[in-house]
Length: 225
Image (cartoon, rainbow, N blue to C red; front, side, top):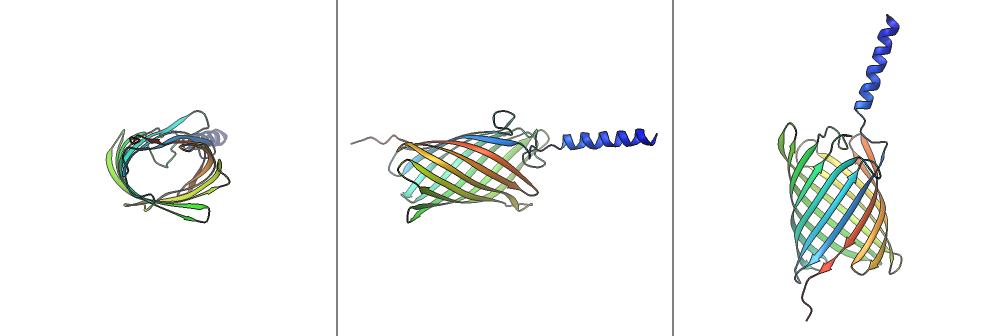
């Protein structure tokens, strides 16, 4: 009888551990497109699509679509207001406690750029209003983000790109996440580049490793005189 109880307890523990699998041990992947589409000297449209997976080639995690209107105050200062749609499959609970959800997001953003020698610095400040729907609830959250990005060109074609971004919730819990990223990039054309990199995504008590493939393609619709 004691052996039977012990076996049942062990099976229950194994089932619980499997049910709480977060995918933390999996190497996931984010496949991304970013574009800045210039329409006037002061205005451009941001376009973005991201496909995120718990594993490199399968097990869908998240679809993120984002757009925004940029106002170029100068070449080194850009203000943006935009909208994002995010569909998340929480099967592996990439963010602890998260269910499957749909999110509509409004954001305000300000970017400042400067250079020190050959190194290009970019400071990105962003506020987000997040309208989230799960199977059981609808709620609104607010968040602030700051990203410091450094880009170092090896030559006209190859470059190094690194950044760190912290997410601060404007409600409890205060700490949201931190993203540390490093990548090697290649300029195919002056307006077209690719990056292959690695992201360490840190939440409270849990970390995720993600390979990233990014495509950056900028267009210019201003009439040429």
